[in-house]
Image 1 (spheres, rainbow, N blue to C red):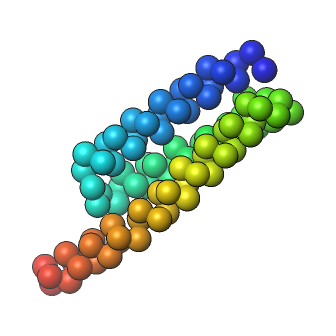
Image 2: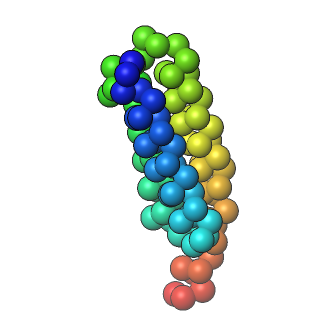
Image 3: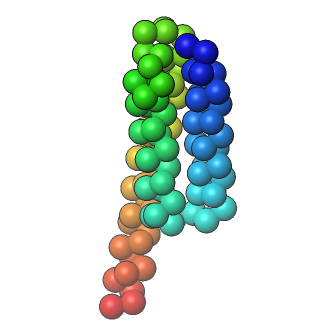
Length: 91
């Protein structure tokens, strides 16, 4: 469990960085895919770091990653709609 804190901090910083980039360039589908991947990484982090038996760190990673994933999927729908609209205007 000693490395769980550092892994959670790195995962949180990664989610924050991708989120800031996503806010800076809204409706960029590739960045949102990166945010999905960062969220999935946060969810599987307890198994990767072998701290899934430690309740608090594991729950922190699972809940935080799950909420980030949910928020990303909710934000992706308008982005996909705008992307399709722009694609149809070009063609």
